[in-house]
Length: 254
Image (cartoon, rainbow, N blue to C red; front, side, top):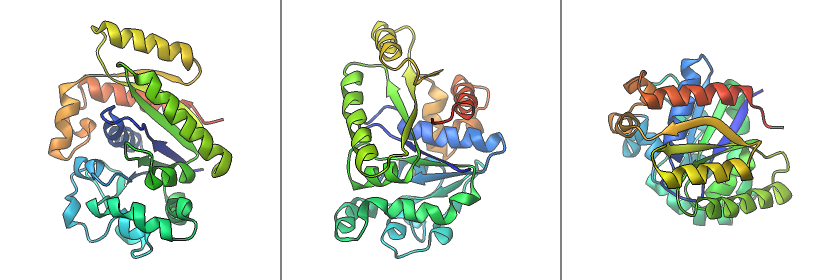
């Protein structure tokens, strides 16, 4: 059965897109059929996969509005997985979707047509709570939350947990939190270690053991339109996402 996983955090700059790209790439390297859905109008996941945002014939924007067929919009990547690209016009979809029927379920209806073709569908959400994020949470069955171990990380998580709870209650009762992953971690930083311990105390059953470190190769890879596994398979970032992939495969949403 296809796993549909929303990768989200309402706080920006926590490694959300980096996690989406490199996790689906790691799954592809392991032989799993993967689709990455870029639901962020900034299109960072699209660009990070080596796809020129403004040169695509259609994007998730047209698909959500019913102006393009999803099968014709998906593109292949060098990383061995497929991509449903974003476009800056997606920012306007927040207004346009509000006038449509079943506005919260548009992405779910789209993915229902093609999800069976993949083992894993990962959705890169925008770093805000809006109709696009809600669509991702309604379409998904699992949530993966990247967390940077820094000041106020837990307060941001409290807001996100409330959002997920509201979606579970009103729109998607099957949605479950698969886990939280610590990203951009620097073990030499006292605050990072303190926040990491707080996460372990608050989410003992949900915190992934894998920790993604700060790594220059991770930061460089998107500029080359590649996942870190394509860019430098032996670096610490690659090894972390391979470990996270293995842990994710062992961990199923209840």
